[in-house]
Image 1: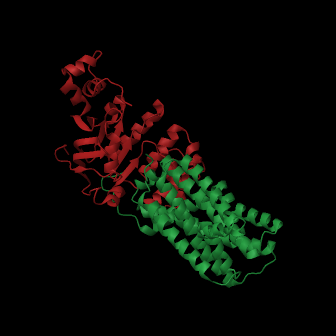
Image 2: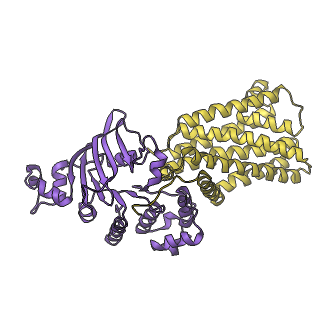
Image 3: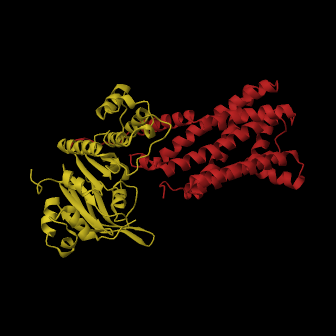
Length: 252
Length: 259
């Protein structure tokens, strides 16, 4: 520490690189993140394959959807809430780092992981279901996965924006997770009637499963798929808006 | 160079901060000279941490101004943050990262792309090279404080803010920290620290400000404050024998316990 020490503004590139490296390390070292991101979708694939619940494209889409949902709603939101409560953000915010960079790094790492998960699930799914996918299929799945990850991360962000306590966020996240999964499964099977099926197709899980089914050429693109796309974009705008507007960085 | 000739590195003027209807800081003003160690003393809830939060650019005041080396944390928070080294009251780092990874992260946030050898050297400077692969939570209290101080000074800042830096430390660790603070002053840096320890204030601070209810109660060198308030009836009422800085502090801020 010297009187003459220059304190120039750090370069944004170095700031972002440092944040991304740290956030990626945190994610890779977290057993919970590993299970939520990779293991859970694979389990869904294996279980649904044994039960012969539906065609491969639908089941792979569902497995990716549940992976995205769990990693965002339980993984991302809980980690953000925990770090806020522990003062990790406070420590980062006293450095000359723009707050958007702190959050962009976390979201970027999470999105990249989600895309990696989508590829892994597709590869494993194609082996389990003895189905071959073209490069175009992979590309489309990545695009839908990016959209799905954005939907669920926005939902996770809204949760940490509206609720302060990490314990409460963890609990609400798990309840929401179960509700959304049940709605998606029950809605897609249609066993609770057409009205419920229509309602389910508008939920984040239902909309995303519809999009996965469409891009895997299971169904031709129609009004349901357009509705699903609009619903996903709407969810991103609303949830991200809530999450940004009401998010508080400080623990108290 | 005399005090009158030394320029101020930090100036706080007429600062007012509110949380809802509660006023946490009420017209506070003081300045810190280059190369000075300045103590901000006050009971719990006096407004010390809130004042630091404004200087750090984390909290916006209702009115008043703050200038850090000529820059305003209200108008140019990132520029001010680049000039500050900050040790928070409860330092928390990502639990999954080792302290070497944390040091690398925070060096990067201050614009330093340090190679591994340089990071190890920094850790060795604070006696933590052997602990490089451990997470922060696995360090002892003294080691955590040394690491936090290392992170706060990693970019060689002209001014260091320390929020209760010796809280919970054993006497050996406390003395080590005082030595480090003293060394940073010898290198030309300035330090603003908050503390509940009058012993610490007397041992390391050139000047102290005693604040209560967000207002300045007294300002001066510890010895001057004792001399100035020696005959104050509020101070005499609490003194046991020779008047100390603690007697002055309690006399001016009251004996009631604060939560």
